[in-house]
Length: 146
Image (cartoon, rainbow, N blue to C red; front, top):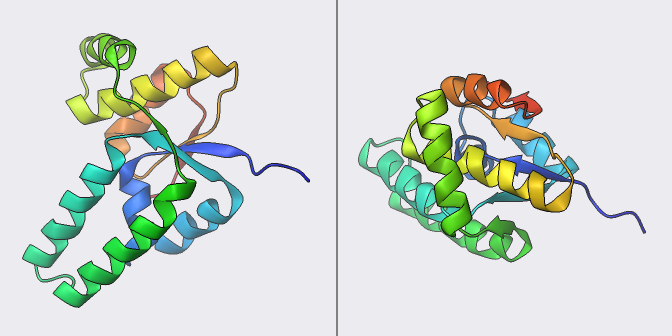
């Protein structure tokens, strides 16, 4: 049996799996091809993004409940990278070097630490334009879901 390859998914793409947005079809296709690898902050970001969509009137409370239920069911299959001191240290460097937000720096640093420790460079999947440019600058193989 061949293991499903991993890809590093930024929250900007993960949310498209649970909430219909532009490019959700492309995101879901990638989720069928790859196992989710991400920073442990992804669950917090997802919760905030979904709540924000309720507040904006884009989804109902029932839609939020259904999305959160699916997230909880799926997350047992996610490979999450702890936001540990090595990731935070690398994220500081990434933030200073690339001028990205704190969360983008944590995601990029997490992918780089994973690559350093595993010897593998999984694709870095994002729907965030600034993050896409920054990840490419540190030689991550970026898959754009825009």
